[in-house]
Image (cartoon, rainbow, N blue to C red; front, top):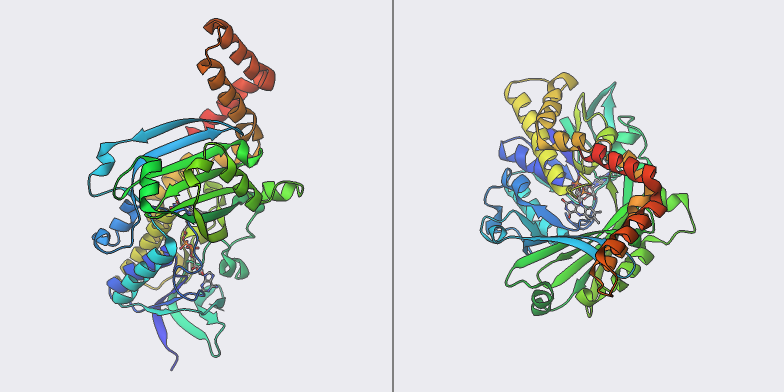
Length: 434
Ligand code: FAD
């Protein structure tokens, strides 16, 4: 007889592990399939871990998960080519356990998360790629893997296969990934002694700092940069919309943008001497609310990056992945307990849970953002330059009176964008953030 599972989870990233753990813990018979050599081997993240989402799955994760530093200071920098204007928020409240955000290294973190999934009773198979979904009419009934005889059946398949979402597209469950809906990000991990990090970032022990950046470094493309402190390494990266890279082949390549960021006079001293041990490139789904496909159907649900669940404005992805994985798992558990068939009508409970949670509420709040940013390159070129120039004008003491300086700043804004442009940009931003 064919072996049949309650659920098959494709992928052992943040979303797949959350779904598999939730279901296995509740006693469901779960098979998880991962194409990488081990969980974490294929996964890329900055990486900030948001404790809240994981706490709801594994409340005492802090006792054993491999965590790097807890974040006590958040910096947001707007760069031009030689300076930055920024805000820093540092609070002693962030230094009291239980901490709210941590840096992690995904290869280690995912290995740990996966060990919990297996402890909970799920069966994990690595180095195995799911090639297609097995269908019975419109209903997903199982998966076919690249191993000989690799057909496996289940009541429901959880698609946690990441940003490319190949399986759902192949099965016609949703359309092609659009270049304007994904960012291409590159990052490096630079190793250096702990004491050096502590001195440079004014932290002690396991306190950490994150810097989020935007500005002329992305050369007018919609994108951001980041620099995060780990225990004895720094992660630095930059990402821009794939459609922007494609629109102009003359444009600087992603790795060259990263090199440029590393040479920025405000960044270079922070990373000096770091030994590069890991370089990775990965896509991030950033289409937001309007790009989320249908996430359930007869015998299937989609979770995490595969469903486009990323809040690009707040740089949150792994927490949405874990939350969607958990909620899909919970909907499946409830259906099973009620003796229901895993039809679309039953699995709609998953969509209800998402709609009631921060996941869809936040994506909905920023629904206009992708469109606004795509049509406003000035936010990534003209404004960062103007802002930095204004700061320099104001802070330089050179005998010019302040009123004249103010006039100079206003006229620099006006000549770059004209009054109509300034008003319309302000309106667009208000609309996108409201
Ligand atoms: P993934 O982690 O990508 O997992 C998908 C898994 O499925 C992979 O392990 C893959 O090998 C496997 N798979 C795919 N296809 C198949 C198949 N056919 N058969 C078997 N296995 C398959 N989020 C944050 O919260 N904080 C951050 O600081 C942050 N920074 C980021 C920085 C970068 C550079 C990038 C690229 C992303 C960042 N994100 C961040 C987003 C975050 O990494 C993702 O949202 C999150 O990893 C999504 O998890 P997932 O499980 O859905 O997908």
